[in-house]
Each structure stands twice: as structure tokens, then as C-alpha cells.
Length: 351
Image (cartoon, rainbow, N blue to C red):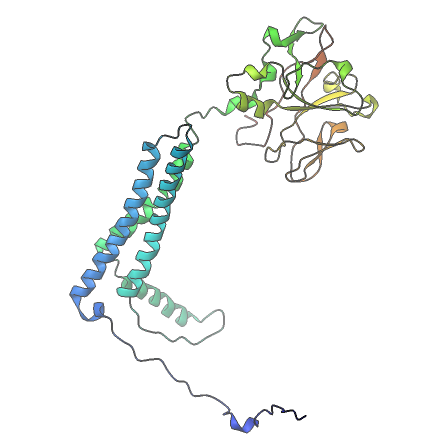
């Protein structure tokens, strides 16, 4: 059996260098030779920018005209038109800019030698002149139609995104309502009376709304808690998003309580907001051995024995504590609302 071996040709067969083939001869465009063609191309570019602007306006108009009721069809239609308007608006600007460059701007090839990173003063001045020449070459100063068209399209294109974003914020800018939850409201039918005669909202199991007695909470147990009677709240989901609490019982000797909070717990039972102070995820994982609460979203970890302070993760503030006590019937009640806003920080949290 014979085998063939590939033998490379001797190096002498290759030239030491190649001649510069140069640039291909420039081919003039119709718009460069015929003023009428250039004017026609200008109108075409303006038309593309106009279509972009109209698509943006149509999306904004549709946002206000199509009601977002309970039907899925209206939501789909509104989303579809908003998406098409935003897409066509941005696409029109891109296509118009490319067509402008291809038909009206200079297409002469330029050769520039590579130089060190910083050029000398003379070269930098030449570069500045080239930039000025590029602006003049774009034709903006002498083409007011294009200037107005591109400015209008660029100004209107973000509206299909910005208008729904701002519009969906609603008209209620009262941020102080985030400071209060249903724990501060004490309707008599859902509250218990404390030894000092005041009323406190009873703690109830989530979601059954069953009031919780202190005797029901065994050492190491965890209860997901809501204000008793919250199921009858007018804005149930909004109130629940603020009011959910995690109730834990542990050895009272493990608690590190400052003097002003020693009456916020009851015989080792502590209650903390279940809303993470990072981005608002539910902190629902309890490590019984370490007495840590974990947020499943970004692994923020809070120490229940030490005022729910952050021991790991991106959260910057401890979980707000709900002060609790026992009423005259043995049920756990909230002494008052949280002493600080729950959840993530916002710009007026401390005002």
C-alpha cells in the first residue's frame, strides 16, 4: 500500500510583498449627477421619517382610546398596537438614516493611515475640520425638510414607551400611604382588648383568617400571618402586599432586644414583615437551627434573634418588626402599626 504525502511548495514561489491593489474606481450615483433625483431621494427620506412619526403618534392615541378592561382581547390589542407603533417608529428612524446616507451623503472612499493613539495638534485640527465637513456633507443646513422630518421622528419615537410608562403610574402620588398598613386599623369585630384598654388588630393565619392564640405557637414553629378580617378589605391584594407577616417562636433568652422594644415580643414570639427590604420579595424561608430568615430571590438573610438585621445579601435594612401582645382572650394582637415603612426603600421613605 502506498501513501501520498503533501509537500509544501518552496517559499521561493511566494513574493516577499504584495502590491497595493488600490481602491475600486468610484461609481457616481444618480443623486450625485441629477439634482431632480437628489430632490426625489430627499422626499423619500422625509416620507420615511414621517411614517415613523405617524406610527409613534398612532401608538399613543391607541393607548388612550383602547380601554384596558377585564377582557384579555383588549389587553392584547392595546399591547399589539403599542408594540407596532414603537417598533415602526424606531425602525423608520433607522431605515431613514441609512437611506439618507446611501443616497444623499458622500460615498467617496477615504484612506487614513494608522497613527499613535494621540495625534499632534495639526492632525487633530484636520480631524475637527473633517467632522465639520461631515456635518456639512450630511446636508442638514441646506435641507430643512430633512431636518424637520428627522427631528420630529426622533422626538415622537420614544412616546409609545414613555406615555404608557408614566400613564400607568396613575394619578395618586400620595407616597405617605406606604407608611401605613391594616395593622394600624382596629375595627372592634377584628380586634382584641389589651390590659390597658386599647384595641389591637388580631393576628390571623394566612389564608384562612383564623385568629391565633399564643398557646397555639409552639417553640420553633412558623406562622404566615395577616390582619384578622383583611379578607373584607376593599383593596385586598394591595393591603395584603403590605401587611403580610412571619410569626416565629423561639427561646426568649436568644432574643437581643433593645430596651425600647422589650415589650414588642411575647414570651419568645416575634413578628416581622415578610416583605424583603431589598426589592420586595416574600421572605418565607426559615432556618430553624440558625434562626435565620432567607429571601429566595437574592438570598438576603435576616437574623430573627437580633431584630431581623441583615447578615448576608444585598438588603440594606432589617425587616420591620410588628409589636405584638396578648389580649384578654389569649389571642395575639398587634400593639400598633409598624414604626417604619415596610419593603424596599423609596425616595420619601424617611420624610
